[in-house]
Image 1: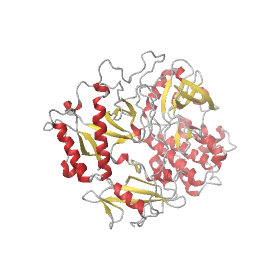
Image 2: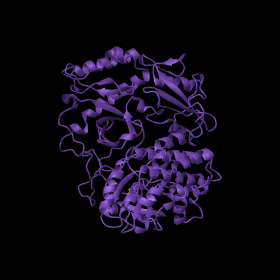
Image 3: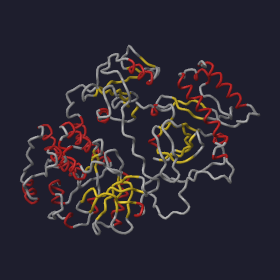
Image 4: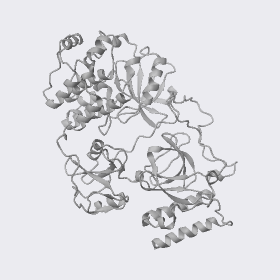
Length: 581
């Protein structure tokens, strides 16, 4: 087997060969090493004026800091990059037919571009100039999951494949598969920069402490499952979250050294996070558990098809009726035969297409993990279709009333509440209003993630039975006094509704103000009446409800506060992070 120095010598020799004027591969860029924003190495092809063929950034001394496995990957990538380029799509004869990146020439459907998109998605342009001549970098990506292309221009790849990044464009990036030379679009959440921190299975960028606990406590993870995430309190530092025995998760702060190293315990520093992980996978050394495998998660949802906003009605196949609401039915449907979606079919006359489209454009721009994703619309003809992501367990109200829902412990009920507060905080930050927040308008995923749906729809409903206070469809029991009496809807009236939603959750879907009519509720509230504490409700949670029902809207809490207090409902008096081992 080659030694580390032997491999370095081979790489340097290959560079010299490439620099030779008679070299067959003359003009191809050479891999260089760049330090990425995550303080880890990623690979780039970097030509320079002094070395038009490219050079190793940092020189051979810097290269020697690479570990053996990194060098093996580096060498294989170099070889995979040179060979395909001799027959790359870009260098084929102009008469050769390659993979089409645009839609089929004869299409029976018409797609209207997403008006909220700030990115122009087009067929990837094949530059007549080589990136080396333009002084550009070509960055190597690592595939994190398998992906089978389903849209025109998609690139199919497998986990572990290497790709050259051509262009970052929102949710869909243009890339070239190194092993075949094929070019196309790839979902950006399915790839990461090669050899970056994001490419490590145990690194979860941007994940909060509470979300880490949700993920690690899912049934697929066992004791010793772990993740490393960014610290929420110390910029530039990290946290190690480990599932302990039982339903507990322990958190450890990973601090940085001045020279770039990392440590949990000051007595055991490490030059890199991968070495820290390898150490604690081999021994407990003060942690609650020996690290086993990275946290197992559900494969992320693929981004919605590029530019598909107002889509043809015939592209949807309604398969199963999921429920019936006041203004239409909800169906499970297949989009173009390959993507499961939920379709809300609005009753004819329930809203103006023009007013709905205006509101939908704003709704589409609100994208958050706790909001049901609005994918597309059908407004040509009636009924109007609203196409959203599909949530397997349906509405929170129906779930709570089901056998599975009624078996959920208090800790899960509080977690539902915290997740909804998180989504409403995002809406609050965007100066938006929901207007109809209740359990029926929240949906539950297969992994018990809760998302808010139908935000904004209440504003464009034209049904008098819904818009009038006396109407039978008006959700008066969830509506604040100022909104019911004067039509004054604000984020603070949403806070009132959230307090009522908490009673639905804690009583497993009981209708608020049981035994009282809408008019009786309004009269009682105006006299200062408030719903009594449900028998199964902790007094601390009831205290939060009463804060939400303050007569003065300005005295009601913010959703930021509600999220914080609900996330820490059981841990407010506990130490969140473990002492150094």
